[in-house]
Amino acid sequence: MKYAILCYNDEAAVSSWTKEEDDAVMGRLNVVHEKWEKAGKLKPSIRLLPTSAATTLRKKDNEVLDGPYAETKEQLLGFYIIDVDSLEEGLEFARELTAANPGGAYELRPIMIYNEGAR
Amino acid sequence: MGDLAWIDAALVSARPQAVAALLRYFRDLDLAEEAFQDACLRALKNWPQNGPPRDAAAWLIMVGRNAAIDVTRTRAKQTALPDEEALSDLSDVEDVAVQRLDEADYRDDVLRLLFICCHPDLPATQQVALALRIVSGLSVQQIARAFLVGESAMEQRITRAKAKVAGAGVPFEAPGPVERAERLGAVLAMVYLVFNQGYSAADPASDRASLCDEAIRLGRLLLRMYPSEPELMGLLALMLLQHSRLAARFDAEGNPIVLDDQDRTLWKRTPIQEGLALLDKAMRTRKPGPYQIQAAIAGLHAVADTPDETDWAEIDALYAALEIHAPSPVVTLNRAVAVSKLRGPEAALAMIEPLAERLDKYFYFHGMRGAMLKELGRAKDAREAFNQAIALANTPAEAAHIRQQLDSLAQKK
Figure 1 (cartoon, rainbow over the protein chains, first blue to last red):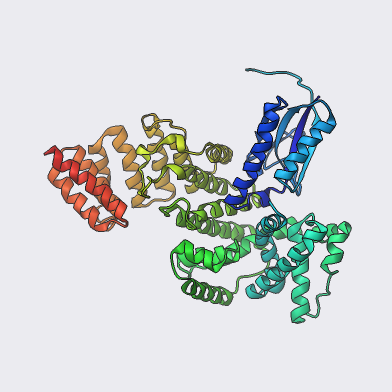
Figure 2 (figure 1 turned 120 degrees about the vertical axis):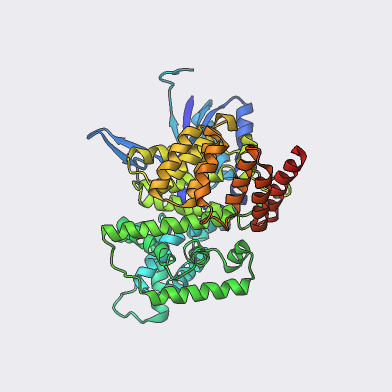
């Protein structure tokens, strides 16, 4: 079963981490990443650049807006693609991520590959 | 990351909004800061048990406001709100609190708080120190270290700056569009001062260098509030693009490495990508300005894998535009670098000679002039120019760089 793990957190708070905190979190996350990658279950992971760099095209009136589409307290900061045996296993991955990087939430969203796209 | 580190990050990120809103309530900087401190202490006690509130800034504003009202009781008209236990337990109360703090108020509040620090009577360094203390919440000790001065001297400086600002009477009504634009312009200049303070640090790991990160954080904060300001996008892009080179800008001894000699594989890709994306977005508005142009120049350097691949013609054109938008002899001097690459030392020399009077005390002018003369084979004139440059060098590293030039002149002979 393939899932996207959507990573939500308060962007302003995350970008206020000190360098030491940031390095520590990344170090712990990398341990989790490596483990699941070795098991062949972690596919690509995508980091989204800050929402201040985002642009939104509103389809209704073809209007181009600066900033992200959703103005929420917590922002979508990135996502992982995983291929796991069950939802429970996906949750296990998310729990390990949480232990490495508390705060915010992980949304597990089942996905299907619709089109592999250009290589 | 433990509880405390998490709460700390939340408090740091909520600080500008919270202090700015409290300043609007109390119209007194010291009182606003005290109220915020008080709210932080309560957060440290309350959040580990009850979990962080959904909107940390709103929580801190409510709690800080209550605490200050309790203590001072000077503003009898304002009724006390529920205490923080109730606030964080009942999310609907929190929602009401959040709604009351309109997004537009936040924006004007934070802009005002930053603008206060830009008082024209304050010298640039004091503007920066004040902003770091009030807006960013850095400790006096941290700021003193960043400025390489003693803590008590910095304490005094900040106290004096605050007194000046307090007497200035900044209006608390929501600003009109023209005034808002003016404030934003002053604030952008101040944020860039913070950045440059950090950029001038020779040690990338120093407290001073960390001011670059702080300036970028302030830039992102402003852009989240004013998402469609092209010059703000330009400033943030400029800072990100310059900061991306941090690891390549100094050798092991802390001597600066000029752009052409930097190991470009050490340039960080993520800030370059973010900077280029912001620049792209800004240029769509077709409202060019000095920050966007400077960012575009930095962007052209950033995308060149080797110095030879640099698009000097485009850089020359951008400097020509900058000469119109923000004319200064230093801009022309920088343009001459591009001209020397495009059309040779003679053309560059012709461009900078008229600047001699105005840049007579400027290290880089004599260094550049010497380099051009050297390329033209005018060794005697070059030596004279380099000697003038050495006399004006700001750092031992700058002097050493010129001495190398002199040495290679001597060898040629």
